[in-house]
Image (cartoon, rainbow, N blue to C red; front, side, top):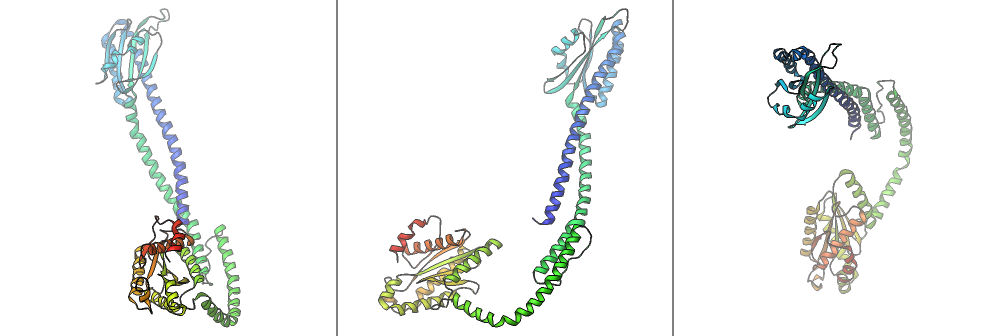
Length: 452
């Protein structure tokens, strides 16, 4: 992840997290406050109806009581959520009621009986047919000081909490939408400020450092501010000035004295890296190149393949025709291998009659194809005295292993290719075999002692 992405992501996560936590707390508190306010309004309405109905209950005037309930319905239409209202007489019998459609069953609940007999207001929240209902009762008593405690009846109201929630949710959703829009705008402004004040200066400084590292010693960082980043850019420029002066002086001194040394080293390296008999790379070259290719593949997320080639029955050939003839066979094999590989591939003599080839950026299928072309060319070519070989001709067996599919390090990759090569010999020689996990390394000593 780039520095820019990290900074922006961190900023967005911090602000969004803080905003989300604050919003959740605010919305939750707001929601609870509205529910509590609705419940208090329901209680207040029931109290109001009780006050209005006191004289009518005392006079047994049904018309006045109906008018009081009508006023309660008017409040219900104001989204208070009241769906049930009844008035009981002094004996707990229903005188009149106002009930919304679908809530008639509340009239049969035992709360009505308890409220009609209670001397104090009752308040209870319960579940009716999947609806959460808040029931509130208010005893209607005389207000005359000389006649305290005379009860004329009871007013009961019921509020559907679900309806209240449904009426509140649009308001909450609008608040959330407005908050999200505000957050988006705020984040945009913050990101623009962070980009201008932090990301762009750091990016310019990184670009200058990269150019300087690649050889542009005259590259300097632009100083656009006097904060910490500006101070860092100034320090970088001072360091670059000093390095440039020292480098130019050192280059002049070294250039005058290294030409002969480079020429000698080049010759020494060539001799140290080449097999004298075949002209291919030697085992040291192979080991160095293998480690280098593993590092390159890990860096570039690419693959490469290793071919391990062994001459079939080579000891028999040497015993029959002598070592000079065997050396001629190895030299010719080196030429065949070099002609069948690309310039970028690395052929080496691994040791004795065994050759190793690194096929750069080549997968398993491509490696098998190249190995088959080498095997076919060896089989078709003419070698001195090959008719006396056990198979009537001189042949090779080749094992194929691919990094990183078959192994994760150099030693295991060589082991995998070697196991595949001995598997080819064990299956009849003159074959190309690709490594598979089923080929266990524990059989390798058996192959080495029996299939040569």
